[in-house]
Image (cartoon, rainbow, N blue to C red; front, side, top):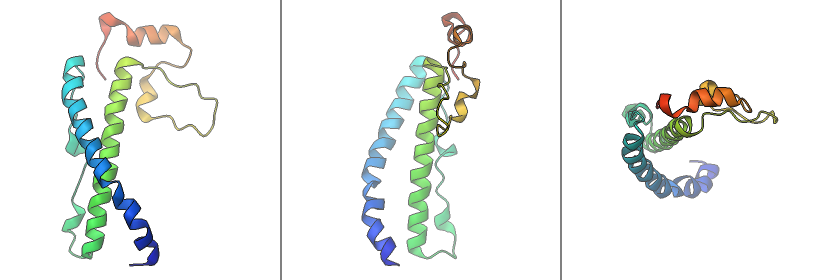
Length: 132
């Protein structure tokens, strides 16, 4: 281990408890709000993959870190998907693209263009309302 890794480790692993709390919160949200709004549930394990610890050529510390990173990145990807499906249900409007550094989320590709009221009405019509 290098001194860089040792220095970063408390901060890196310090967010593990907040990640667990986020995981629990997202799970409760997903299992309550999605059925109420008739938004199809998604498979959590399609986003969180813990498999690198089975690689025999990795030292135990790398296996631990790989497992942690797989969980953290997968959980955040899962959260983005839940937020995106919710956004598609309630507000399917793209953001105004004035700033070049804005990275439009992939789920916005089917949203109404910013300022296009007719496209928004087609997407948001209560009688035709469908979950993403």
